[in-house]
Amino acid sequence: MPSRPVCLITGASAGIGAACARLAAGTYDFVLAYRSDAAGADATKAAVEAQGARALTVQGDVANPDDIAAIFQSADDSFGRIDVLINNAGIVDQSAKLTGIDHARLTRMMNVNVIGAILVAKEAVIRMQAQGDGGAVINVSSAAARLGSGNQYIDYAASKAAIDTFTKGLSDEVAPDGIRVMSVRPGLIDTDLHAKGGEPGRAQKLAHMVPMRREGSAEEVASAILWLASDQASYVTGSTLDVTGGR
Image (cartoon, rainbow, N blue to C red):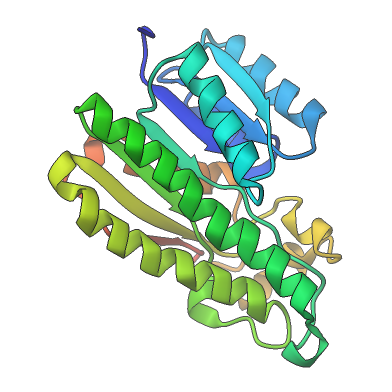
């Protein structure tokens, strides 16, 4: 048995996932799952180990069910339990209107952001139910689920809206087991996600649209996620929390 609760983070090599690990290194041991950025995952691992946490990095694409199975098998082999899931892996694509979005893009978007996230949550819930002492699942959504992101990322927004609905449904299913399920909706956050979508600096360029007149940081989102995962939020489930600067 591990000496500390175990937190599995998908998309742990950068941005919000890496920030969660760094901020919570005094509380959890970690399974750090990533798709392609091995160097980033190794840096996250080194950062949490320097604070006394145990950490395992596992490569896998959540769009691939076999990779999801391998991630959880590695977690089983190394720690034997999962107490918290931060369901963070996600993708965005180039800014486009619906008329410029094809089937291949939609398939990839939904496979990662919706189907992959749901299957990851499934595997975590199976283990938490078997353990019999509860747990927490935090799904990382987006303010786009509420805003729609027309003319930009309408497919991404739809995928995140699905995650919010899934969060509520799953929370109702597993609440009797002591498992809490929440969703966090970041707004304009200074991470590499925008650069991957072809718009580096997007958060800064649009910061004037935010009531607080600035972009947020990965650490600010991570702090909200970690509060929801903690015992301080013990009576919170089925909720979505906006971390958007008021947008």
